[in-house]
Amino acid sequence: MNALTPGANARLATGDQTVLIRHGAIPGAEIDVSAFLVTGSGKVRSDADMCFYGQPSVASGALTLQGSANGETRFLVAPGRVPAWVEKVILTATIHENRAPFGRLPEISLDVSGVRGRIPCAGMTETALILAELYQRNGVWKLRVVGQGFNGGLAALATHLGVEIAEHTPSTPVSEPPKAEPKPQARPISLRKGQTLSLEKPGAPRLTRVFMGLGWDPVDDYDDEEGSIDLDASVIVFDRNGQELESVSFYNLASDDGSIQHAGDNLTGDGEGDDEIIHVDLGRISPEAAHLVFTVTSFQGQTFDEVDNAFARLVDAVTGAELCRYTLTDQGPHTGVIMVCLSQKGGGWTFRALGSACDGYTVDEISDFARHLL
Image 1 (cartoon, rainbow, N blue to C red):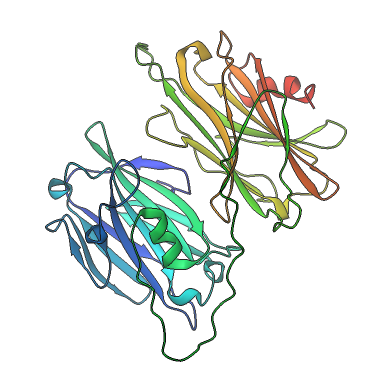
Image 2 (cartoon, one colour):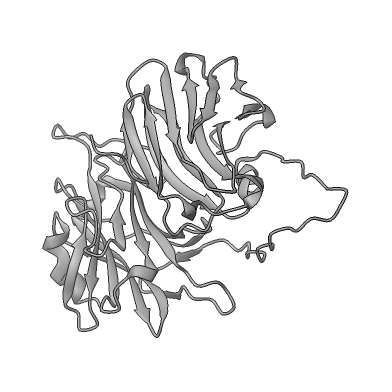
């Protein structure tokens, strides 16, 4: 089995789960790996739900830190002891005192009872990461690789998960890393069909890496002997003349230059949040690529009449901030939709909601339709 990449998930065998995280070392910096038990809100109930070097066992042995040495950290998760209120076990890594970014590492790998995952780190500026999560779905435990980064190290990550971190005030002044400018607290923009949004804000840092998330749920009363509804996220790359350069999908997981990476196929829409993810490194996109058109197709031919809660969202992969979201409101008897277009012009990027229905089971079958929408 190939190693899972961010956004992909796989089921785990029954019984206790051994977790091995290989994070290596960064000269002059210390890497701390921790795990959290979180509720359905994505938060811990208290500091007692954080498993780390200072508290190596939580929830009566449901989660245990077995050791950390030589660039590796081991946990044991005992599903039989996990309390009923626990929605997920979240695995994280932080750089102590923010002394270096994770971009100093080539990657971080995971092995959970034989299921492997990997998180490429090249180019990362963050000092805290959510590596992966273990969660239960329909009585089966699963692993999802995440790779979400945070600037601000442990304090930022802990705040995100609801843990209060007491700050140490030294008796003598010390040199501190510059503080990041406060980020606006406005909610992400909910896009309407045809709306265009500039992703470059005056005075704000330039976007460097984003990811597109696709999520959906089958309708509750859907019954098909052939299996679950399988939606597929894809991206088609066009030049300024509307000529297709290439496409990235579940059967072609990366662009030729590696700037666009598909995290893997989800066959059912099972689980919360993003079901398929496409990562885009904007700094590596070829100048010839003027438009990135994100599409969704129904591989088995069911129509969007049979799909609930379909959405696409664009996320700043560096800060974790959701930039904008498009909800599929025009459900109907079609098998494809051209969701959104990410375009570069004059050194900046814009995001345009298209929301155009079409027929086709794969990205190749709807490429011409997408081209006419540019």
